[in-house]
Amino acid sequence: MIPLKKVLLNWKPEFLYLLIRIKNNMKTFTCNFGKNLSCTIHVSNTPPVQGKTHIQKFEWSRKPTMKVIRPYIAWINSVNQQLANEWGMKIMHVFQVKPGWSSDSLETWAYEPNGKPTLLIV
Image 1 (cartoon, helix red, strand yellow):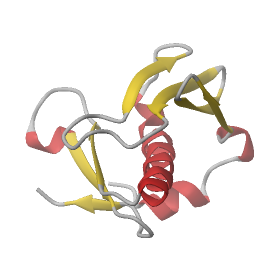
Image 2 (image 1 turned 90 degrees about the vertical axis):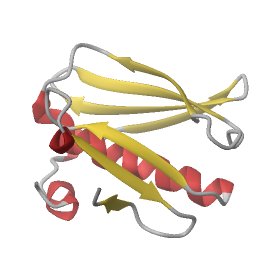
Image 3 (image 1 turned 30 degrees about the horizontal axis):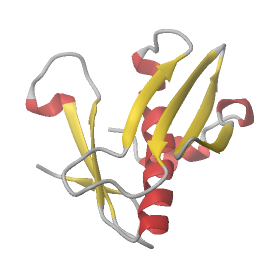
Image 4 (image 1 turned 180 degrees about the vertical axis):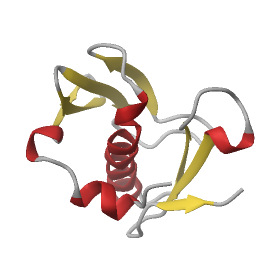
């Protein structure tokens, strides 16, 4: 596994473009990963009810490859941490980091208000 800090240090400026819009009680976050690949997520403008997801919709400009998984996780971690800080609540996110459904194909991350994204070992 590549340490998150190393991924962020190796990013080229064109890999990260963050756009946040608020419309119709939804926040929209967009990240451009370069080479015409971007992802947009739509998130509730208000904290979700306990046990419900805050991310309402994902939109990729084209099918992503596994090469983008680390920058994607770093971006989602920054979004989730921002929301945990803003809402004053804990958030958890599970990522599929490898094809298949074995125990090593998933990563679980946790976010606490005013904390840092934490990779949980399960």
